[in-house]
Length: 95
Image (tube, rainbow, N blue to C red; front, top):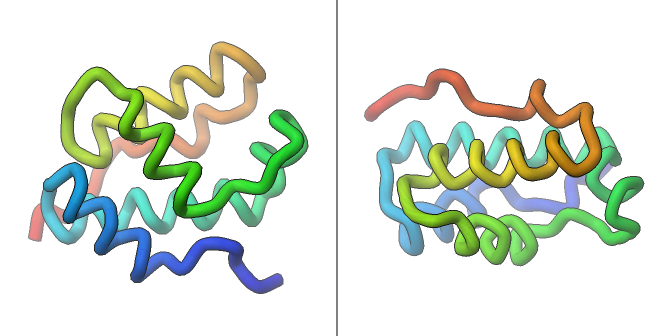
């Protein structure tokens, strides 16, 4: 399966827009690819998960770095649909 999200391009967009460390943005991008590949998001909202969607959803978070914003969004999806907890980020490299 070819990912719908280019992780390198998403990582760059996340750092540019929300700051954070390279390791943090890389982890968020990887989780986004995993979420897209799982097909869960598309099944729940009837739309594909793209880098644009990720950036738009993370922009809606109150504040924070990419991982903070990602976890806020994943928490919202967990409350709305269930089954998203495994996509949350607990640790990442700070390089």
